[in-house]
Length: 189
Image (tube, one colour):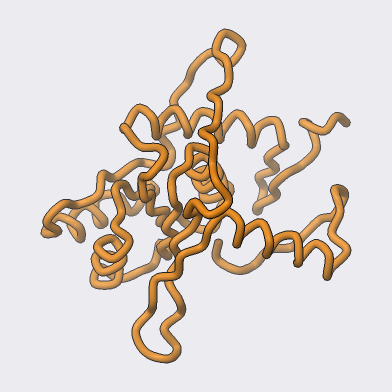
């Protein structure tokens, strides 16, 4: 089995290889570019914890956008507050939530564009060169999650690419993580 054929994600009855993950990320990046999103954009991801969530986060990060994770179960008030605080330019949602989310965001002064996560554009990968990622700096924003709010209202947290990389490197060192490791991930992304 080659590196691109190895499983990258396993979720219920789905197995996504590294090669397929790369193709899905590339297709999603083109979808985001088609929506005029990229470096400097704040892309909210309000999807269930599935491979699609991972694909959209990787695509946004690879374009230099900042990912704003929002629970797919977030009530309307919380969704609106987070979209305003971040501020979110576009929100990735699944088909089951798109009409509800559109109604919940309609009264915002500048509601984010809603992007249907199942909309993965089809194009000929063989005839199209991969998109070159922008030159990112270590202190560029990568994620803007919110705290859990256990000590009051949730707070917006700013995480740079350097923060995320340092966290992952420390985790790998502490756990002995290596290229052949398999992780069970049960928390929301």
